[in-house]
Image (cartoon, rainbow, N blue to C red; front, side):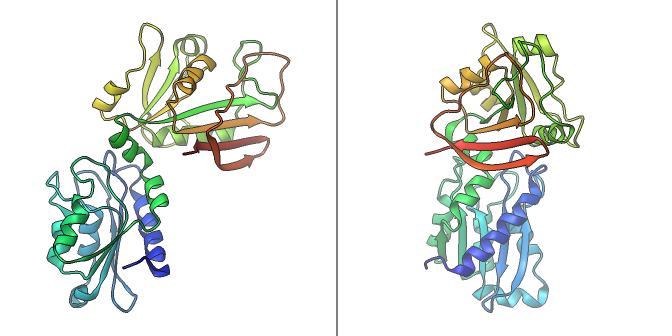
Length: 310
């Protein structure tokens, strides 16, 4: 069955629910599920709250009231990521869906995890369930871009980040310069709390002694990494240690090394529109493949986010 306007409506609700698991679901993906009766009423919904606990589908079925159980035979379950088909810390969600006897399953996107990769969808179809795949696929993949990149590319999702003056410098004649405002610094610490690791080069580490913590936000501080020629970055090692996302905060040579190798997925540039210096270290040039995905101004500071244009 082709996707309908209602399918998109309920998938948006799945995405909204999934975002509640941003901190505690890791290293698992964020997933939301909604069960809709034949008359268009939500009779159950849930999300993956915490790694090791029930998946979104389990929580959605658990929320169905006893008097609504009889409606499952004609119901549709919407889930933002393909239901799992393997035994991990919990039983396969595809088996649970089959056992509940729902009429239809709508999936946002396929799971790139090696143990799934379409097997959950196929298991549902083999059981005679009508399955629609790819509803709001781009939005669902973006939600779990870290998880999907980690399993598809076998490396962390890489965010390059720097702050610059209005005339394009990241320091003042080689000396550290306060470019961020108190508010945008808080946003930077919020980002740190959302990512697994943060990296700077040796020169930045020795010159500025950055703490790289979340002291202006609430949450876990990312793993602190420092690289130089004697201690190069090993993406395979980060993958082996389960690091799904990495912030690279510079300086210039470190950022350029990532740009030259094409090792980036997202770039965030903060520009202080009211600050200029006579000379200093030039900010990196954005690659031609960088496409704007969002921008916002906070007082005199503009933050622009970019992703790689396919």
